[in-house]
Image (cartoon, rainbow, N blue to C red; front, side, top):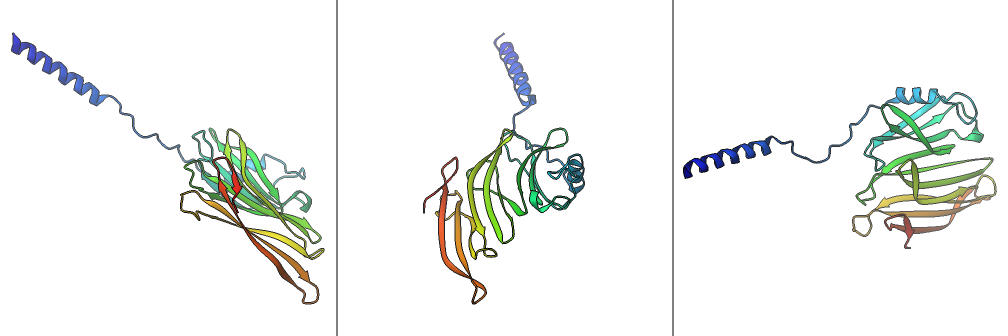
Length: 230
């Protein structure tokens, strides 16, 4: 009798073990599927819109980057291009945010100026990739420069760092331009922003720009935005 109970217990234990082994095991969270994006898809999206000049878009110099830029768990895209149908007054260069929800959709414009560029930046905070955008615009010798580092979430953008400058050497002979470097300079794993500001004046006798000052500023990320430490 006792041996019979032991056999029944062993059989029950075997069945429970087999059931547990057959139960779906939870693994690491799967990454979102990377959707296809190419120039033709971008051209088609913007063919359904009109630009600021109320004419059709005519895109060139298309550039895009895909990534998990928000906390929603989806793949988004950052797209830039020049619009040959826009006049100088409304700016040729634009940067847009696209989202993928059963197909690519235009989410929001992030930048609009004459000339520009963007790149994806990992600042080492174990968060979402950030986007650095810079550009300039102006006329008749007066030009303005701007750069901003942003993060995206819940349909809006957060500005983590913003800088501005100008180059008016063609008008009244003075400029204050910036150069930005992303680098972990103190070895803590977080990327600092190193900004070099160069001021120039135009020497009309020598007919060349003369550097009048060169300054370096360092900004550190405090969890929300970059603040100056030097």
